[in-house]
Length: 483
Image 1 (cartoon, rainbow, N blue to C red):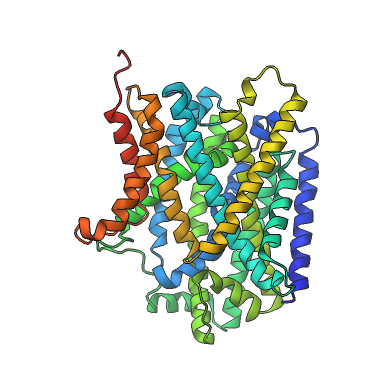
Image 2: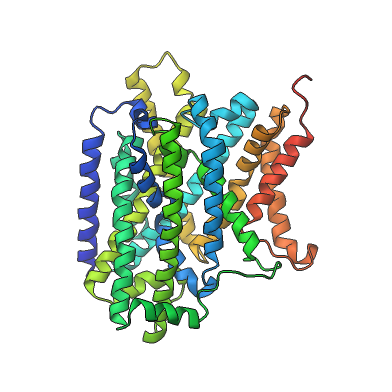
């Protein structure tokens, strides 16, 4: 594909996003930005959240991962389903009952101000890192297939992407994102299905015969029964469950969309519908990955990284139409990561740290000005992190993503578990220390587990251990409420 064609598709797609932004951001105020005036249709939120949950990492890294891990990722996905039920039945009722704008306000009510800011701080760290990694993957593809051909530096590519995301979320916030995510999810899913059709035609084989080849090649393996293995099926399932609880239920970006629904009943409908569809969608991504591996084997294609498999085949070995479909799907998967993160980071800083919702001295105009500054600052921080990942990236991005999640979201899991399932009062001032020590201990155990734990290797279940250590630390220094 010509770099000019790729760039043209990118610009047309971006123009479509700005059209939706113009429609949804008219007469927007702070409540529109933060909560969408709590008027979002639940079915629109449910469909749009698929794209926000999957991102460009799933679009590229999951298919490429099949050659290394087969279908073992599906056990993580089944764990997701269990996690979504916990969110719908435990967390959503809590958030709606308290009428929260930032979900971390709960920690202040239950544990105290230090715990509150610790939770919000870990969210800011986690969401910044996760979003930067997701965006890096997409920007890196554009660099390889477009900007390198024009001798344009990576930093400029990243800057353009960030600026576009800032511009179309600047005013409308969550009200705009609900609708742009819906559009982008539709394009992404269409791209997956069409890519499988194109590969089937290129190989001159029916869908059924390709599935049989996948089974004969051993790529459909889901269960690893060796408990020492990092992808042992029970570890995978529990990891998926707790990753979902933290990355969705304890994450301002994802819950901000749920809290924009009209009421708890519609928010639950959204969660149950979304979680069911997500299982099917992830399976399609793995099936696409297996198709790509078969195609690469038959054509003698080799790539330096598993993340490069999909774009290499789409751009270099298939028809221009297949390349257009891939690019559209990739952009559709990428923008929800950027727009949702910028909005949620702005919300958390504005509400959790600057307390804009409690400052009666501020006019709407002044509050909006502060929000704009926070929004731009969040964009600059994400840009800096993308540049860092450009230097240190050395493995499959989805593997790196879940590793980051295990360390950064674990303390949030421990904080909410303590708040929800005990009646004790935390030593509030000790919470930041406990929350920082937990991932440090986890890192030490992970690096030395083979020696210390008789050959055991930690996988993504590290998030459970991290949360448990935070919970245990809070419990050890807690006291009864009567003290």
